[in-house]
Image 1 (cartoon, one colour):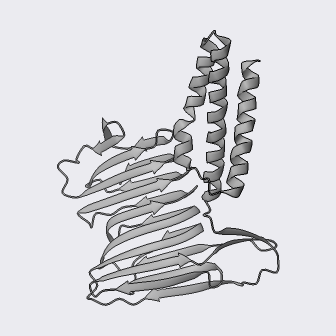
Image 2 (cartoon, rainbow, N blue to C red):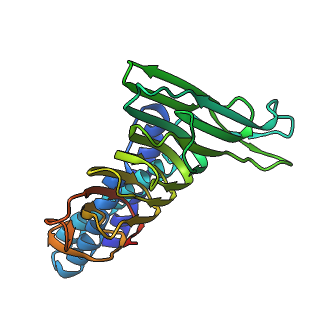
Length: 306
């Protein structure tokens, strides 16, 4: 039997079996797991060409077909998960929610020294605006009542939870729109946690003292600008296929630990220290530092100074 027949036979048997199992179980793969192993398919195809023994060719070809099937299935699973598991598509012009603009806010008092914002927004457009006298303000545009705000205070610290109630996407005469504008108080020391899907995220953090930023996103476009108000900033991002643009102050030392071998990377003013580790020339001498941890799939990553 020809090696090509073995390859395609194993491929179709595997992809069909995975799809069947996935329909009845919680079988799941992540984007990272898939794209870290796809080059092995090319390696195995190359080996099958070099091997002269037909049995060896068939075994290697079959393995290549199996790995290709797993890679494609995992990538497909990850792509559908970019919109989160609770996403629903509604094909109905009679959808029972009205499009509107809603405002949320949480009052501020001087006793609050630190605060954390935990934001879950699904797919949409999310933007950070200039500071407010409130602890936090949110302006949402979309189908009414789709967000809720919850605050937990212990005197000097406040935890804010701003979540999307559901991720219904409406298809009909009116276009779906989900946007949130965020304003924070500039006095507390902030921690920011964003969990979004296919989104456009624009965060100007220069007016805020932010010590930690954690972003988990799908196929998104991220623009983030850091300031120099905090002595140490820890920034972590986990993304799928995304366009990532990061601005850092010229006076701040920065270290990037990136797991993004399949991505296009441009780290302006950085030198490579070791595998996946980059630092600015002033990292050791700078009084203020930013530590970045970047883990993403096939993305475009651009880090610049200003």
